[in-house]
Image (cartoon, rainbow, N blue to C red; front, side):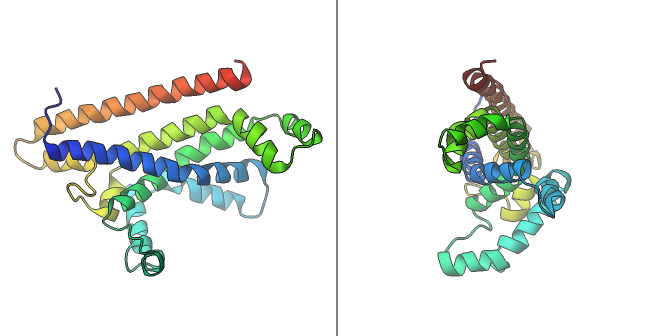
Length: 231
């Protein structure tokens, strides 16, 4: 069923690796920003919320272009990272992880924010009266109670990263073995005579991975709800 070429299997492996790295790197920022939007009132909050969700409404090519001019070797951020840390994002798999993380970030922040807003603040106050400092309350009360939302956010970001195409191909191109993900490989195969069969097999793998991610999200969120809420 999955009689793929070595290059196609490389695309599958690279896609999974990029999705994992993108999700892991986005998670601390997702939790921090979700907490900020859920718990704090400040000037410009609506603007920040709009910026977070902007990748959902912008054409992915626009997002990729913005990443390219910002994180490219001649971009202000990319030049700084290369000169001082030797980090390069453009036309590298790390850049693909960055673009996937950016595209999946709104889907991560939203459920985390909603989960934090749903927590009964009296539980946190009770922990504080028992002597727990703010950091301990966050680690032992807030985050465990928000875990179902955090899990959903993680899996949605991962699933979005698996299927990312427009921003990634604009930022890091479509280099076999380096930046060619499943989506880019399917696009390439559809442009080649006789490549429809291989494209179909890769599409099937993509569907299986997406369903697995969604199933994992549902199962893990239910388990977390039972464990921390008794539902």
